[in-house]
Image 1 (cartoon, rainbow, N blue to C red):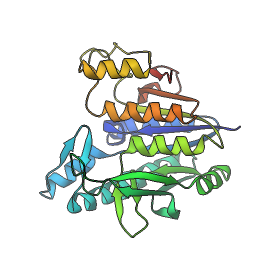
Image 2 (cartoon, rainbow, N blue to C red):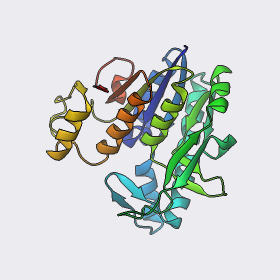
Image 3 (cartoon, one colour):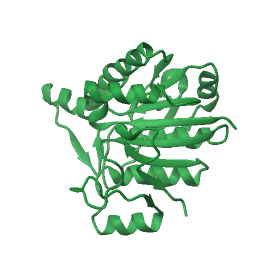
Image 4 (cartoon, one colour):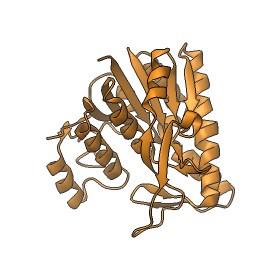
Length: 257
């Protein structure tokens, strides 16, 4: 099968000009088929604040009321997505910016209310692999924003790590998929205050133990859940690393055993 690399980038990386430009240069050098999935939560939080809309987070996930949904749709699907697409075009990469609603790319269900009401948050139900495969094979690089839809006319805010993981899982049947989560840290850290305390490899048992100990917390928990689910579904490799280390085979490698 042909190799496909899915890069997910978020945090400060996509919101600071210098780090974004370097990341996209490195991304443009990756050989073979590729997809870029981006976040943009900090930009959304800043705009919401300017508009007088409170941002609430629980376990690294945003509570999305109707006003917040408008903000994230503008920021993720517009400002951040098109800025990335324009920069990739300048590097000779023929990129196409997409939300889950475009071409019916990613269909989601509104997350059911259990302990917490996440509002207009989407849990991915289906990824349209035929459309994605067709684009990729035409030499078009999809740039996916963390927005999906419910098929009933409603946009849904969807965690970017989940978008990357579900896309990787869906395409693992057609491609040899590598999934790389890029952010500011060098990988999963044993000590949050020590940048060099990277855990080189982690399995499910170690993950659960470190969560109980409070070593792994916040947004890293759903990120690792997505990583393990991807491996279980046939994704060849999942790596969590720094955006500055893209392509250098460093960081934390996920072990499905």
